[in-house]
Image 1 (cartoon, rainbow, N blue to C red):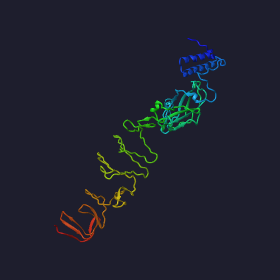
Image 2: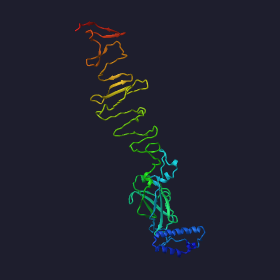
Image 3: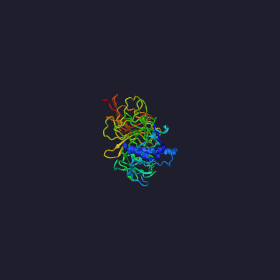
Image 4: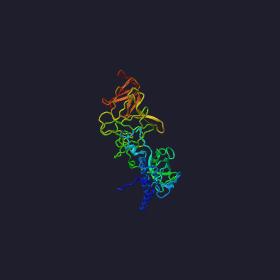
Length: 440
């Protein structure tokens, strides 16, 4: 093993010979600078450990072939941002993946729907500043970061010229780290990433702008984010998750008795056709419940229903009970069970055509046809001058009592009444002369 005399650090001729040898071997200037930077760091270590004296070993000059930088102002064209600038974007559109997922506590990795966790809108940036000879720039340097919508021209989306520190402080190798939107400049607006498909970074050092701009690429995990503002997706529809459309094209709600609630305006559901049903085999009810004086409206638009009526009820299994049933749980009588109205002919005046009142009274504005045998119960019979008649067409009409005749086909006799017919104590009284005609 070759021994090294640490006191040779003060022998600058030896260092010059070392550099010359590297150049003869066609070693790139950047590689020579890195080697000298390493020697300089080792020299500082030896001084710190008091292995060598600082006054006997002046600092190694990192000059590979160009004059050293002068103190004071400097021009950006005398140095360049190292060709391999590492633009590390640790976050997705709203935050860093490692901060919100991999480094988060398990119990805090996901937020609730009412208080979602919003990741910081920041970009982690690392770079190395060198001069034209590859020597690292270690002085505090002002850097301005801007984000644009395209690689050339475009719209300026963000600038770090306001907010936190506007300078970076490189280490002895010229390497610096900064967080754009946190330690450097104000927070990046959310619209930068949510409203633009491409974002480009422009760097300006002491009024000199680096070209070309660097495109910001998302981290691999940001392309398939595990959460949305801290909420994981779920095809099963459990609470505090993001609903997704499942493989069958359905959206499922997995919680017990969930609700979809609109807090204002009109909640609409629209489709080419709608099906509202309880799950097969569940025996569940469908309840429609307007609030207060709200009503249930069925509004149709056609002229002729394709089947049955525009409101059509069918049941293939009904055996007992009612197809329609209404129950009013009070003793009021000022309403109707049902009422049908339409316009009077040639006008827009609305008139009732058929109704059944709360006491069971039926009103029909036209003729009433009974196909079977009518049965009357609790008929109130009293003295009067009018009666109901069924004519030859089967229509029930009301007429005044007077000249009244009826025939008894069993005996072939017709009884005629010249005056009125009265009933008292279930006894029929004739107010006029009774005459009997001969059969035939």
